[in-house]
Length: 502
Image (cartoon, rainbow, N blue to C red; front, side):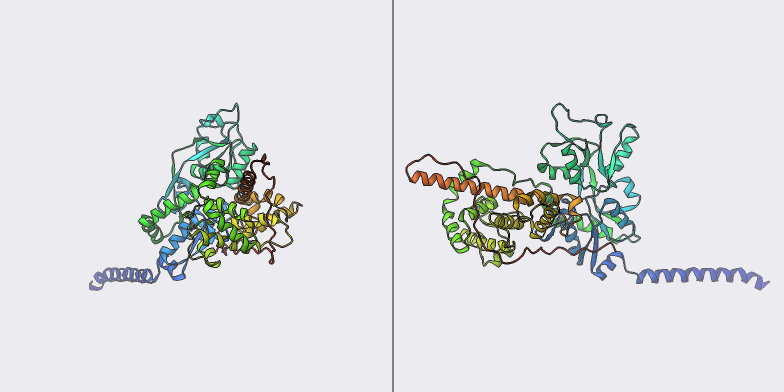
């Protein structure tokens, strides 16, 4: 009888002891297992998936750049680790990378949508943008103002984007709404296709379009398909949530918010400032700011064998002849030298116009030495200026495209046709140095040539006045560039070493 009463009690005791043991083992395992953030810090690497686009990440003059890149680099620094980029080809690949946990974070201008929230976590929203219809302004064609205006039209959006998801939702109330999804186009490709008339409409985030619109005259925003939506970094769902917590702490910092404001100004508010030529401002500067600098340009020309009018034209393009000019990226002075360039040519004070101009001329001599000697003037100089502006690796990519098209890669008139293709994903994805704003060096060189032409014209007018007023000739059709020997072949700039998906 006594044993019968004790048996169930003994079983309960063994069961309780088992539960305590299991809980202890689990607690011990939990205690010894590092959190996600601890694991990242232990390995010393934060893996971030992004895309090679103007809004996210690209190589600029041999250095990594882009809104998402700079913000991700700041977060990696906050964690005290190295940033490692994973660059999927398409949005679909980006999401697959995250599903397979091959990156810690996806930073690619991603809208927080309900469908995405079912599969992933998100950090704090740091921007917002409204999905907006983009169309080409045409005479006799009114601006579309609602979904009914785009029924039976050719609409193409990026495959895997939140815009495709939005159209699916809108189709329920507008059965006639149809569209295509492209996995081979980038946002700039879609803008090109709308601009050329190949397609009727595309949908882009308003901020993305605003940052690109100055390069696509004739394109405009039709209407927003919904209210501005939050944009955030995406994370795989993880059991401990420490990385998400670290993101919340990082984005809450005043320094981070200030950085975001700076990056928005740098990448989303920039306009094509090279795409205008204000004759009135130029002549005012020629009267007010140029005279004290002219002697320095002439001295620099004597030391470098570079035409002083070319040096003056470059200086006007860079700073409008302002000795105190400073760019958002920290370049300074009449010739807008970087710290590295100034150090290379022995300039101690970039705001000293004498030092700046002499240093700028010396630096240009080095830049020209990177162009093959077989390239003749004036093309040799135009190549040097283009390479200085966009990076010599990207210039070499454009020359490759020119050669593939059966044209002479040593002629500027041909290479300038192919430089803009470096902003087109179907081309830059196959090139060594990836995306570049290839339209900028074309405009950069064209403007310098215009300024040089104007300076030569003003020089001729001055000579005529000194000779008591013969009828002045017209402007020179082609400003000549000096012949400066080049001794080394074109050398591509280094690029950031990217890891494959791990």
